[in-house]
Image (cartoon, rainbow, N blue to C red):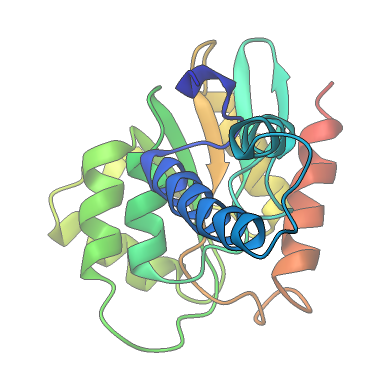
Length: 198
């Protein structure tokens, strides 16, 4: 099947789809050998499942396309490796909203990925100044970095710099507990702020 029929965003999700298909093929073949084969082929069943699956909430979740700008809720992204995978998956110019509560550990992969793959970063949360310092150390220009006090304010600032053809993505790289009850609430606030722009 064509990759264009996969609704998930990013090469890491294509790899996940391929792994899921291989697991399904193994299960299908096992059932067939047990005399419990299904009426349709494994390919037909897998294809229908892939084409209908749009992902899970808060994980590279498409929220809206407003005036040619795509908005993606990736609130579940709470570590540097996830940031790197997420931002490298976007094929358009990217405005990122990042930050939150830094639980500890090395954020260098996050700094490097944001520098390489984004054209502007809006920072929130208790770690915003630490992240800004890290981004500058990684070589990002200060003019590409700004602070916001709330997530709604961050969405406003991201919208102000985004142009048609861009993607605005919530990609925190940090925990949510400094401002929210959890990543679910953070993602919902992002969704609501985006939908208010319609």
